[in-house]
Image 1 (cartoon, rainbow, N blue to C red):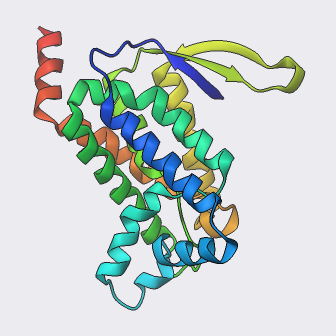
Image 2 (image 1 turned 60 degrees about the vertical axis):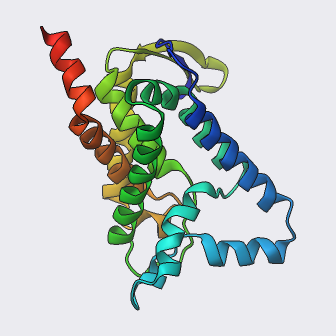
Length: 225
């Protein structure tokens, strides 16, 4: 399923979400326009490589947990991630505030990376992408707006159609797919090229973190009254 838009309007301009998208696009363009040997050097230095953590954790390796969040392996990889961030991130930022959204996004990416490290320990495959942090945004969106309608394209070739579904259905199915793929291809980054466990870790972290935010808890209590 390919999301097109959601049904929640934002009250303020999501400046942090726009900035995150812009940074991801700029980094991708910088790498795409670089010479092949420069691209290889950038990946070796800034991508997350689990095997580099097996001999001890250094500041240089910790840095890659953050830098890898803003790197992408191709245009489709970038486009898919930014589409999800564009649709779901603005509402989460609007609900929890600009600064906390930035901290939330980065913390979600860190948890996703740590989950990937734990499930792919010793892997030599460089891991890049914002999908772990974006998965945290999806988890938060599910908690905050479970009944929001998500307009989506169901790609079935000539039978493709546009439909809508509640967020809990759309994101619930998304998470089930990640969990199924993660369980059936444990250490999936080495097998499929997709870090499914980073998605799983980020999504769960997003749900938990947003639940623990005091203002969100107070708003939910007010709604209950």
